[in-house]
Image 1: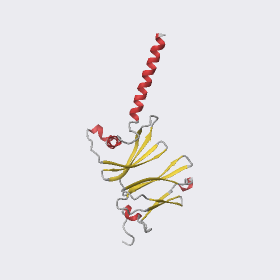
Image 2 (image 1 turned 30 degrees about the vertical axis):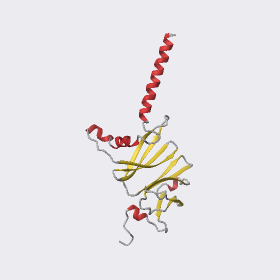
Image 3 (image 1 turned 90 degrees about the vertical axis):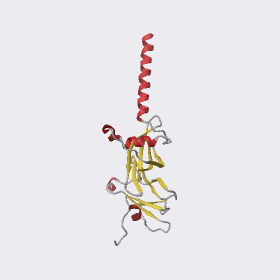
Image 4 (image 1 turned 120 degrees about the horizontal axis):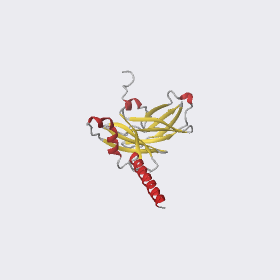
Length: 194
């Protein structure tokens, strides 16, 4: 009987230790309230061995969820970026990747299996220039209104492209309230004819 109790106690300790280690792997709260320090730590991860680290100015904006994945629009050191997170069994998250730079807008084609496909679209709209976006996926256009806010981040459900369309399946164009294409302005392209 004493051996059974000791074995049960040992098994319980192992399970508690495993649960504790798992919680350390997924430390970020679902409400993102502790995301900034973990994002800063993630950005400095290669510098730990050198004894150097640099504080990062991280500002969080909108968040969108897609299954167990979470995407948070952020400004990192003044550059538009996103923090991609993955949810664990404990309902908390860990950082999968961080991207930054490249202008005023971000877009990506996200697939989850063969039947689920979405366009992740986000950016700055502080001047209220962007009224609408048209995302073309494998030749099929999808229109969406852009919220009039400093920043926007949204998921647009689209038909998945066929494997034959995998070279360049996503094109995004932005339009102002009068319907003029302002994509080049947002991406920093020079006006035509110059």
